[in-house]
Image (cartoon, rainbow, N blue to C red; front, side, top):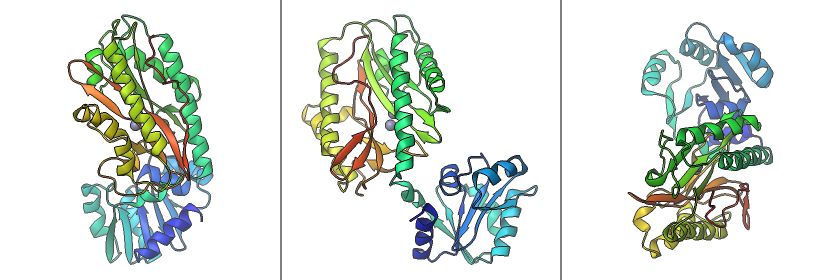
Length: 354
Ligand code: ZN
Ligand code: ZN
């Protein structure tokens, strides 16, 4: 089944005549159009892309299967006119994406009799196609290169911000169109901040350094975390690192198609809990990745859903001790029938002393 066929099946289940797509990721997923503005209208027969004059030529090239509706001065007026022509009655929309302000604008304009919120349309992107897995693998490969390069500039006195900039530069230099998300570099006591943004702090000998970043490659996101130490590691740093690694490896060994997100999370969490650090691993084990950096299903204590074959997920346990520092290890893997294919190649077997 093609992507649009799967979406139409969903529309039929929900008894909808069509759906209004406003998210960047779904717009690209269903049409191929990569522009920053525009909406899709997808029905049982018609597929229409409404966008403004900046993108008319590009839309024709990237989304040839879609009928191009040239937007006038007001996007929502053009959308309403198109919908009136299509004579749909029940229209679905992406409720997590369409803002309240937009909803207030479109509601009186539309001729449809019902606007139906769809809150989990993204689930249709959970199983990655072979072509998507190739793009994720390339994003992961570029990310590995950037990590190796950034470790070469890690020296006493280098600032976290400089490390992050070098990582981003290496991503671009090696073929990424950008960074998948703002690169995290957190060192020393700051490494206990799970999402510490790079600061002007100088990295000192003995500091743990968490680097978390990824390449953006043809719309797909890489995601990798490694924790290293500048200079010689202390016994405590080695101990925490090996605990996190043990937790990550337990989850990687457990993970396969059909297990719940909750049970995969527990595979790692119970290792950390039984060692007495349960309270220091506050976030979920991982998330799905694709055209968005954070997708569903998640690997977390609240994810009851099963992880399907072909899902792309991160496995990223961590232990964070305020006032001391933290360790996180993150790989990006594809879930298979009998296990996982790890797309991340960066070494992790021991705490690297740079
Ligand atoms: Zn990450
Ligand atoms: Zn992640």
